[in-house]
Image 1: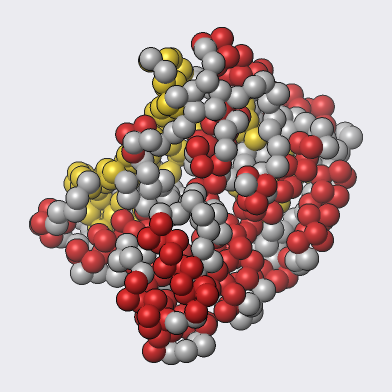
Image 2: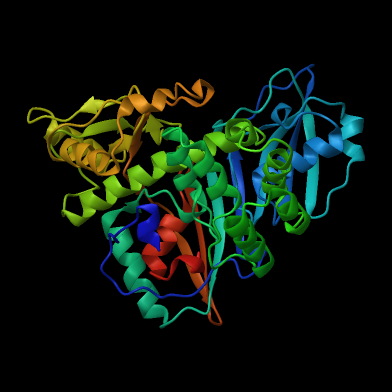
Length: 421
């Protein structure tokens, strides 16, 4: 099923140890390394929020509801996994007393200070992880073998992980392509219906009913309350049949953007997979590559970079070995700079296979969701990876820059089925 999200290969050749993560939320602990807004008199309360088993968008909706403010008034830097224990920085345009007054199960709010500035999306350094892989196969030598291979490469492929697409229902990129192509009925129905095995039975059966009958009024009676975004769309269509565009716009703006970004992520995964399958290096540059400099903020994505040619390739590869820059792949958008040479051929070929054009991302039918496109590094350097075994569980501790997925590292170690992540 990984192929359905564009991940078609592994970098490492060692046998995986299988196993499973997230048997319990405490098996996946994420601590955000934040960039703090300046303290001072202002309307924002800056707080550190620790949540257990809360997906970020749903947590924001719940916090907003408790505080009686629009959800887009709450600032946060990055989306976190649901089945995990996560700590992240947020900002709230309310009084300290009001923030102190709310109580949400499995959510702890640590108030830090007031600021004139909110927390902005993307304004973080990275994330520190402590992950437990339970019931893995093999022994300590098997673990050591695959981790040493990763260390020899110096890192791992920078795939977008499965949670970018939905773990139980990896369909966000499909919805995104339909939105891009202005097929809004298909986009809406894929999101609210389109049953897939792997989801909880109650949700699967509700989606199956709507998929087969198109009866929105009856579906509203049987859809679980926890599918609150889907219910919002279904309730609208029950009263406004066939108004697909307005039905889609019942969703939070940032969630609609996630659909578009997921499709861009799918294309990037296919490009990176093709480069690995064609046995082109990802931890060094080839002519035609576009290199992204790696500064103190560890920029994973950028609008442009430096072209590699026969004159600068040796110098650039020396800088790559020092972790000062990395080759990139395309995040397709209307203002994208494509690579040249073999990498450029791969990027153009994938776009042709997907039957898309950069200009389509201007989204003339939904211009608020237009996307310029950018470049993303294809290789993530990995340092200071710590691991140990307790009983039949492997513990891993490591840091990743913002925008990089722990599951993309874990899949090289585990080589398990998609539902194991």
